[in-house]
Length: 124
Image 1 (tube, rainbow, N blue to C red):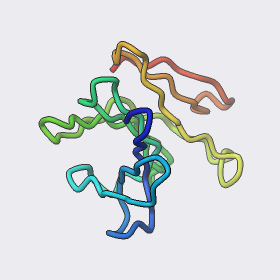
Image 2: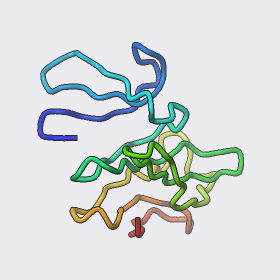
Image 3: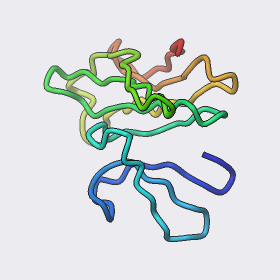
Image 4: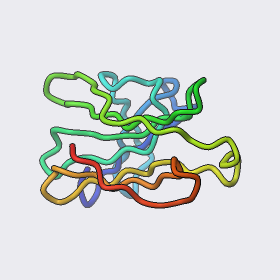
């Protein structure tokens, strides 16, 4: 979120699973209650703090999603969904690990949807 504040997902946080903020050099966690706790991903926040993007775990169709969360309207939107090959599991899995561009218009993700590890540029 800033030079001294991080946003992270905890599967077993003090208020249950979900997204939390933590201040640098502190053990104080604050749950972001408006962000859906079932997404379980790797968050990245826009430079203005208005958008959070995160990936999801693989669903029952072996697909992984990139989700956009608007911090003002508290709404979520699926940006893209890619097949995650079944041979990329456990230690070999390929999470998206989304990273927003400085202008907040694009995200770069890691993906294996074409059967090999690569990166994709996604318009947000």
